[in-house]
Image (cartoon, rainbow, N blue to C red):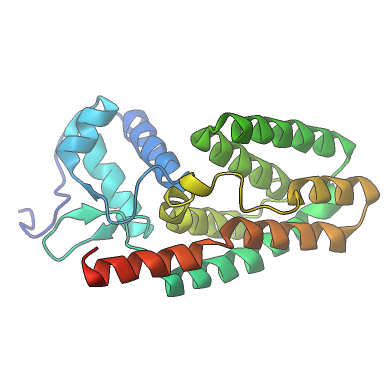
Length: 234
């Protein structure tokens, strides 16, 4: 007998696991890259229609992403992208700095000129996206840059933790659309690539930390402004 309070009831028959995995990965990718606004509600039916699949894979994807804290299960049993606060943002930023600097240091012995060349290409592609105002391409290339570095020494513990943080911070990225390309005074990716070529681990760690902080620099003030407007009804 199924639990009527469970928003994700099981079914005796379901599509193949590969379809469930595809739907989960697609939705996970969209959340990680900030393609949903904070507080945006989701339904199993709506997600299934968007992804062109049946309701069972959509249900399973939402269930898994709630478990990963990428989505919230609300008291009314609805599913929503988490609301973001300045406090949550600061905590996620500090967690990213701690884990991603560690990942960069672990990866450093495995870096080489070939990786530096690969990162150069990714960074050039990101610059093109900025010039075009291509927000989605910019976010995707930024993620690709970081993960190409960290995956040189991924580890079974560290990478899932970093991916979880990117999932949780994804809705913040939705808020950066209007400031695309305007928050960076220095190109920290260029500094990271130079550090790899110069074999300077400390410089690489610093570039990664500054890149995270620069990219998130204006968001606490933006979040505070949004909270103030919500409180005043404007």
